[in-house]
Structure formats: C-alpha cells, structure tokens
Image (cartoon, rainbow, N blue to C red; front, side, top):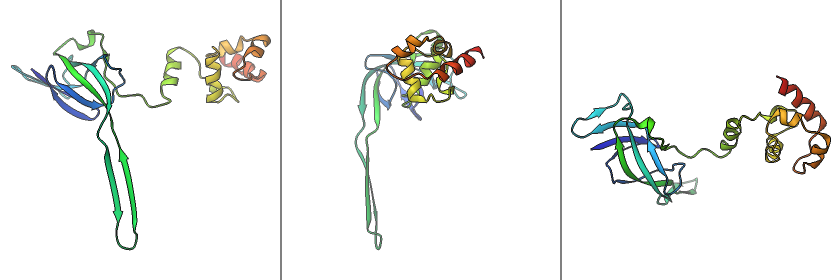
Length: 191
C-alpha cells in the first residue's frame, strides 16, 4: 500500500519504511508526527481524495533536522555594467521515516500533526493568548518590550496589574510600573 501526501508545498509518494527529506517541521528527533494532508491512497482498492482523503493520515518518526546542499546563485551582467553578485542558500530540512499509513481514524490517534516551524515572534503572542492573558500593549506607554518584562514578572493580565500594591510595584525590578498604567489596567479589566 502507498499514499500520496502533501507537505511543504510538495507531494510525496510514500510507503511504510521510506525515509524522506521534507521541508522543516516543528518537531524534535525521535518524535512521532502525523501528516493529515493525504491526496491519494493506493493499493488493492485505490482511493483518490477530492482534494483530500477523509480520515486518512500518514504517521512518521522524525530522524533528524538537517540542512540541504549549498545552492549558489551567481549573476554576471556583461558589457558596460560589469557587476557581479553571488548569493548562497542552504534549505533547512527534516528527515522522517514513514512508520504507518492509516486509511481511517486519523483524528483519534492523538499523534502531533506535522506542521512547519512557526515564524519568530509568533510563538509568544500565541502562548499569551492560550494562557488567557490580556494584551498589555493596549495600555498607553506599554510597548512589546515592557509587556514581555511584565509577563516575566508574572503579570499577564489587566486584573493582575490593577491589583498591584505600591510595595509590589516597587519590588518589580524588570520594568518601572507607572501609576497611570495601573489606572488604565483597572478600567480595561472592568471592560
């Protein structure tokens, strides 16, 4: 049995036991991941998705995070311009070994979905939103750096900032909390 899966903008025809180099995934070596974008299942009774096969998935084990071969792009403009430019690139890749092809029940396995790496700076707001904290940058004078320092000090919501006493404010060394921040936090905490 084989499957055609899609990841990183590319399609791969895989069988159990195959080793693939795919675009970088957000997973560590030894972790088990699951590719949910299955376009086709082949074998005795082929199934073609429209565009995806419902309930099908391909499970794999991450072997290692590697870099691809070096690609060099050289540009030379001739005649009167006499300019040259060289650019190099090494693509970040993930080595995975296909362990199992599931024809149904992919959503009930509990295996982490194979996704690309989140861009830098996107993980912190997502983690803050997941923790149920407020966006402290809505307070006038609190920028991203000050909000980060407040979060490190254990203040992640308007209510927590509004409940600070003068002694607690003086004890915070990371950032100087201004009295108007506390007043605005009280107003924002009430709605």
